[in-house]
Structures are given as structure tokens and as C-alpha cells.
Length: 140
Image (cartoon, rainbow, N blue to C red; front, side, top):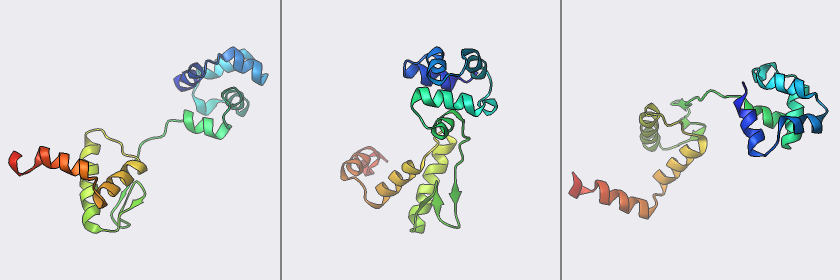
């Protein structure tokens, strides 16, 4: 069953009957499609849900398809999740942080990596001070 489409419809307070009405696709066709994998849906069914949800069909498909998570670290280009880090030392530090936390279940996005990089290059003084309070010389 495509739980994601059901959640999307519920979040917008739209019933499958309303989708059928708005798209002129039979209710039975839509109900039959919901219980099948998205890969088996016809373009007509995808369009029907897209119309009701006021989304472009391609955008809706991207929302509905589960994408496997890939941690993309490339030592040759010094990129992590597509973020280029020119400084080799900072790259290695961020890479280590990312790998350790990834093992703990964190799936960083490109914006997460950019945030880590920005913090490494220009640390926030408030965060640095707090870090020093927690991990400073007095706490060794």
C-alpha cells in the first residue's frame, strides 16, 4: 500500500473520492492503485493525484518514490554530499565527523555538510564558547 499518498491526501484533507471527482478518474481505479506499488501506476492515476494535490506530476512522483540514501564522499575531489572542501585538513576533519555520525544513523544532506563546513571555517563565537565550557581544559 502506498502509505505516502494516503498521508499526503490526509494532510491536505482530500479524500480519494475528491481526487476521482476532480480528475474524472474512476474511484475504483484510484483505490486499486493505492494498494499497489507506485511503479505500477498509470500516468493517468499519477496525474489524478497530482491535480488533486496541486502538484506537478513529476514533483509528486519524487515525493512518493523512496530514494535510497547514499553517503557520497569523494577523496579525489574532496567533496562530501557534493560540497567541495578545498582545505585538505578541514576536509579530513569533516569527513571523520560525518563518517562517525553516519555509523550512528545520521544521514547528512548537502545543506548539513555545508553547515559543518561553514562552522569549521567561521565558528560561531557562542557555540565555540559553549564547546569550551563543556570540553575545555578544566574538563579533561
